[in-house]
Length: 286
Image (cartoon, rainbow, N blue to C red; front, side):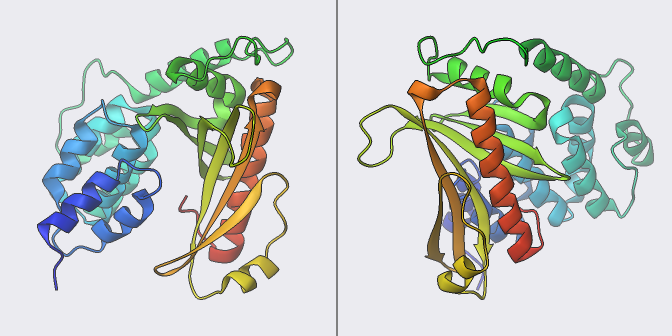
């Protein structure tokens, strides 16, 4: 039986929630009648979080939504963080392969090539230059517990400084946390950084959190026997529909916080979670 309009709308809304995004993507990808128009509106709305728009791009590609092709080409010209995903979606939709070259896609689809494109390549170069300007690896960190603010500007700036060009993107989420996608070897891992405190803690902390995906067909006992212990933080498990969800959570005291410590913590959490995901699923979903 086809899902109700209410369910479809709930899944569309859930694309904006880090915790529910993966399940919502799977549900929307499985639909025989993909909600193309609202997904296209989501991709086109640059005020939305990048990871939410990324999810919409991938669903449109899976659905082979031909109507979305011009929009996806436009995205390739304007947004370097979505070039690869837009190109993959276009390849799925059209059966063609022009890699990540926006001009070639435009020509192949009979679309106009901007004479003065805002330029994903130019914006990528500018982004790298901006990031490099923020990074001074040999200097003492400017953000310390005494000067750091954990509001949108303070925390986003610290994460950018800590991760540098190893982050695909760093953005603030309206839920009150920073969301980033970290390059791990030739793979990627999404990580959440949020102010808060662990249960029972008597000090301010940052939560560094990521998911390893849902592992089907194995009990929690079997999973825990087949993965190494977490180098920092805790590996947590939860029985969910379709298997066991694995997450990694680490609490970093704000009193010890600077860019180098944050970089080390995010990197170790991301690498560990990605290793588990690759070992148990052979995929790179998170």
